[in-house]
Image 1 (cartoon, rainbow, N blue to C red):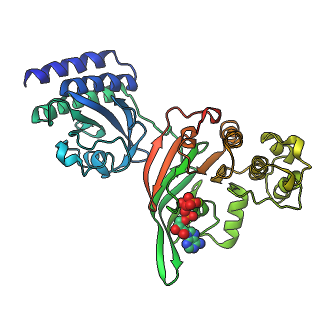
Image 2 (image 1 turned 90 degrees about the horizontal axis):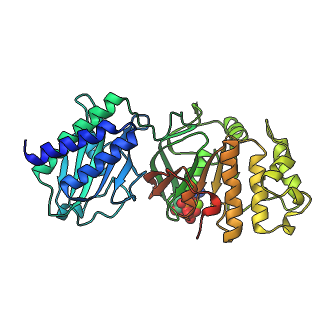
Image 3 (image 1 turned 90 degrees about the vertical axis):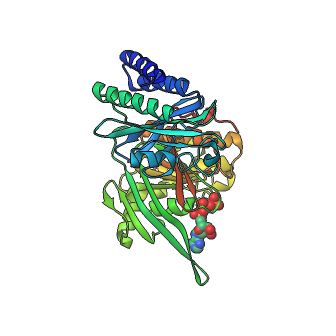
Length: 402
Ligand SMILES: Nc1ncnc2c1ncn2[C@@H]1O[C@H](COP(=O)(O)OP(=O)(O)OP(=O)(O)O)[C@@H](O)[C@H]1O
Ligand SMILES: [Mg+2]
């Protein structure tokens, strides 16, 4: 063993001796890895057994990747997790690579090294280093990282540190391999091309993606407003993949509150009546006044929609979704038609629904700033999920700026 190896091993062991939390162990080791290999940036990724995805949890020299995740086999990280073998790439090769198979910090033109973090029995994550200051990663770098990663893995196992990015929850919605095709003239167009997604109870999930990538289609399928061509949808374990009309109606009534970009209020009913009307056809409705109060419109119950502003109408439509006491609220661009101040008011209501009522909210938006208030952010690209990000510190709606 050469000197670099011995020294680095010693440093890692010293650092781990004092680490009494997973975060601590990872942060200290990562600094040492970056130093020892002269890397500009580094990230540590941990495998989440529950979801099968590997999530970036710790970063050095960048924070851009934290929360990114990759499935097994996907991108550089996914490949190392699947093969359990280190991979080094020259700067010239990196041009063609994608970070985790998905979005992520720009690594073009930088050398890259990815090393599994594993015990003799199983793999628990990987280390990714980029931008070696003095050229390409060498066999010596690989050796030192592999040795130190084994020490790190054993320490993590020994101390019983566990990694639970999405807590220990069962998903409320499970989407597997959803495909949706539409007829366009003579031609079949495949809009969703195999979507896999878990939504956890009480989370605010934001779905981003370019116009036409299938966001509304996905939301409509999850909400029982449209049928999938192929795939699986489970809601609290109940199979809603190919429901009968009756099952669909009951599912929508019992589980789902929808908020659209267009408010779809009945023009001849007052704000209160618009809400009351939905409450009456629900099994377990909230008091209509209570729903109005939640959106801050208790004074406006008697107003007709034509006498309300856009933001007020949208809040009535949120109250209408809330009055059913649904477990899941699906919101499709709820603020797209609103100005900034009004958008923030509406987003604050959505935040309250999640935080105070523990309702699960799935919200589609074009606005990446809004994604900062989410617990997780899903990017849809060309009918597939291209990335899922965890926001370790979601912002309050009132702190969003655009
Ligand atoms: N009922 C339908 N029949 C045929 N094609 C459809 C139908 N609904 C949607 N599409 C097509 O599916 C694609 C995805 O539509 P979708 O509304 O899901 O996109 P989106 O991501 O919500 O876009 P936007 O951000 O513009 O709302 C589009 O090309 C659209 O034309
Ligand atoms: Mg849409």
